[in-house]
Amino acid sequence: MKKLPVKCPSCEKQLVVSQLSCPNCETNISGNYSLPILLQLSSEDQDFIFDFILSSGSLKKIALKIGKSYPTVRNKLDDIIEKISDLQKI
Amino acid sequence: MKTFLFKPFEKYSEKSLFLIGSIFTLIGSFVAHTFNTRFDGVFDIHITANSLFSQTLVDNIINIFCLLFFLYLSAICINKKTRLIDILTTAMIARIPLYLVSLMNSNAIISKATEDIIQLTNSKLLHQIPSSSLFVITVYGIITILFLIWYVSLLLNGFKVASNAKGKVSVILFSISLLFAEILSKFLIFQLN
Image 1 (tube, each protein chain N blue to C red):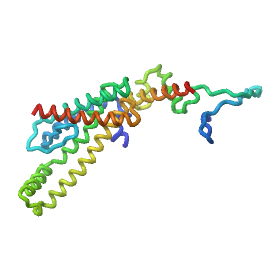
Image 2: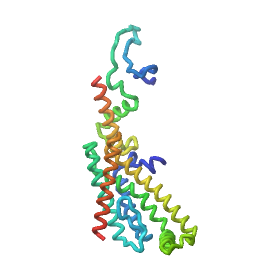
Image 3: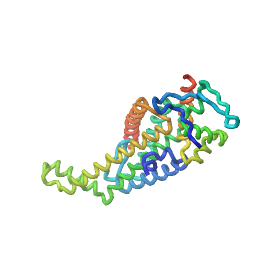
Image 4: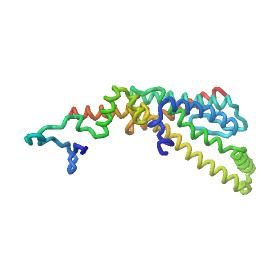
């Protein structure tokens, strides 16, 4: 699966969605839509959130699954919460 | 390997770290007793004429307690979610390099070299100090400094993982904690002897 770019490779600013298309009827919609906050996170952070939901929000289960200690996993979650809070302010 | 030696707190569970830390505290106390070493302070390693197992064990328990107390206070200031067990395992695991240093006094090699140097220095016969004694003490000093650096880096890494500490303020709090831990541990061990 192709990785969705969220930052401009030229100036590092946040990218926005300017075109959406239907693969079935080939309808194209142009506009200026901002990316959902979760998609603005790095793919690593998105994978972590995915694992977090799949493990019913148990950090201990995630720690076991990815082979990291509990505080490392909790720190990762805290960092993601901080990033989301920052993105919400923008 | 780097994670195993310097950042075990990122990978291993608190149960494993606590078990390993407890075992090494006992082994380290026994080794220190066997090779006549005292840990009479958080940052102290001294060769003595004789050290009882009960003394070296109490030294280590006091040192771990002092580190736990002050590092936990700082960690709570940084992050209220910090768990006591993570700071405890940090203090226990970080001290392992110091236990390895005491192994160097096997056959009382360090004690003998130190005695030679002190006696000849006191007698103002500096030129008669055997070069082998100087060599032993120099190597011992260098290795001890390297192991102390390893000890502090383990403490700092464990502290960072336990409290999610970042930035200069956390390093300053960490340094102040170590200073207070050293003072309290010296005081408590001195009072008990």
